[in-house]
Length: 156
Image 1: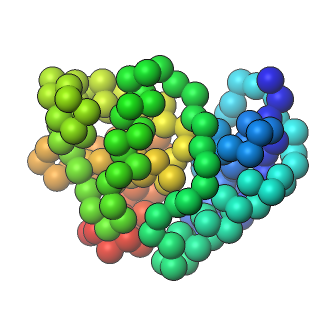
Image 2: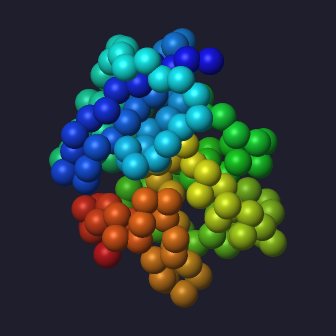
């Protein structure tokens, strides 16, 4: 299935946003990621709205995203990403805390894998998930990027 996509230049590097053709965002990622489906370069209305919200977030004037989304994943991943969206701006949680929140206290590693497969970075803020010891554990776009985002939010 072909998706609409558009890449924005940001101070954090290029960010690509994709939609499903039905008014929902399916992906938001730093553009070093490769997708395995066709993408038509087109800035749809929902992509424009998401681009505006992204710009507002990166400038510090937006703390919550308000766009319809339709990420694709397993039932477990969708549950994790939904809970992840509840982590407020400027706060962090551990993988373990997130696992407890979804009722799976022994699934911290599986939560970490769901973070790694998060198709809607920043909106589902996987950069806000840290190790139990407070360490800046893995992030699909690198620990440096994770630290940059958390510094921007005033978390670290």
